[in-house]
Image (cartoon, rainbow, N blue to C red):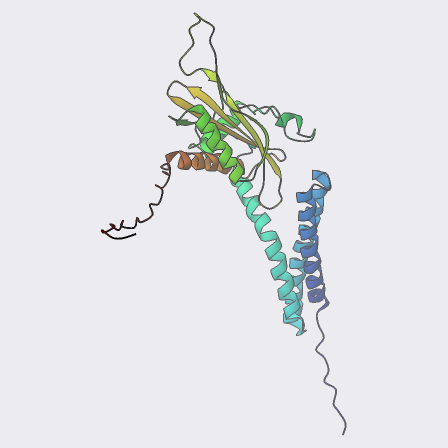
Length: 293
């Protein structure tokens, strides 16, 4: 019995290469993210690796579009290859495209603070920043105006609790977020010499300096929390600044708002009262009758 060979349908080479490039771009993007997060390379070559991987994803999408046209006109196979290449490429560039659109809508600032007039200062973190990082000095009036227009709700947080209690709550919030604490100095009251009048509530500011990480690439972003004693409690100021890039895509503003909201939630929560000790049921005492031994 003679077997008939079924001629295989020719597959578009554009579709094949679209899928190959998309898969290679997927692996390259994953490797680039690992390199950026681990800090194995400097920030510039690490980001260049990621940009090349995403560029390959764009090429895979273009090849998939070309393959679709060829398949439609010439009746070739490879539609699955073209679709998989296009979908993988779109999935890879989707989030970066969203970030690019967001960067276009937001101002070019990377330093957010609740007190633009007297922003909390980076002291210990300033010695850790590399030379190619953004300047540690606050950008000044331009950044303050852009911040006020874009994020008008960012303001200092006043509380009636003691400065030490506010400091402890801020440390608890930072610990929950697993930020790396670089320096922590609790607030201290000023001891006035005898006969020297001091302003009520005056004292040494409490300072917490910590390093946070961005969600996907793990870029270091520096945070400082200042607890300043006041006449009726404490004032909490927060500053968050990106080490790299002229635009923070709103991450620093969100971080400042979130940490203040978490502090307020903890301070507003009622304190848990210790439960009273459990009383064991007592057995009735049996009277001894006359003659009992």
